[in-house]
Image: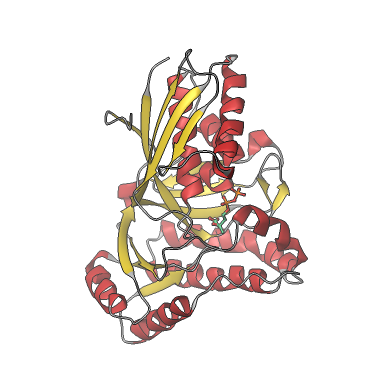
Length: 326
Ligand code: DP6
């Protein structure tokens, strides 16, 4: 059993995963489309060791919390597949702030899955890895792939997996991530998914989503940035309208979030192609083209409520690296 370290990027959903038809298996109500974010990475080292009496898990320097229990549960799935009982040492580190809606669970569970599977020398296909990662966290299903990604919702565990629509070098899009707060987000995605169906507008969303996914895939196929951005922004607002109208309303935005959304709209009106999307956090992803990245970052960086700006390109599938974390 070798020590393995995997680096993988998180992703940003252009068409969001929201609501599950099976909470245990993490089967989503709808398919989704995303791009990997090179620059917002998770690095995870896993080693199964005979001398351990329990899993020894450290995430961002912390142990013994709710998250480590979820990691142990996922390791159990992988141990069951391999037919072993050996405990593992796991150390995981992000290059971006955790709990800010920047999807650390997606890259986290994808990195964990790939590292644990390789450490136990299990031979799994990309599809099997995606299915396995999905059971740790839904978005990890997509993070098991690279580039431009579609998660096929599926009706069974075997049919709910992700595929890479296009590789990372297919089209150079930039994500200017505007951080308006580095605290923990208030809305847990796992709880939010359960609330989705309490919105009176949720069914209308599901009725239209197949069409939206087809349109987004067309925009990617034709490298039509304005279409991609405009669809992604409208989708983000629709997604937040479901959050806002759930039985217990989920208000993710901070004043800084709204400041950025309005600034993006103004910047676009002045001729700069840029579009926002937001997950369950308050930070804002601003999609733009490489030649406009600097102007977008500088303009948004000057806003009164903006703390910092991160920047990402389209990223690859998970890969093994030699720099172990222990
Ligand atoms: C809002 O993958 O965090 O980011 O499956 O319960 O771990 P769990 O949920 P999670 O859901 C996040 C959904 C989203 C939209 C998206 O990325 O598609």
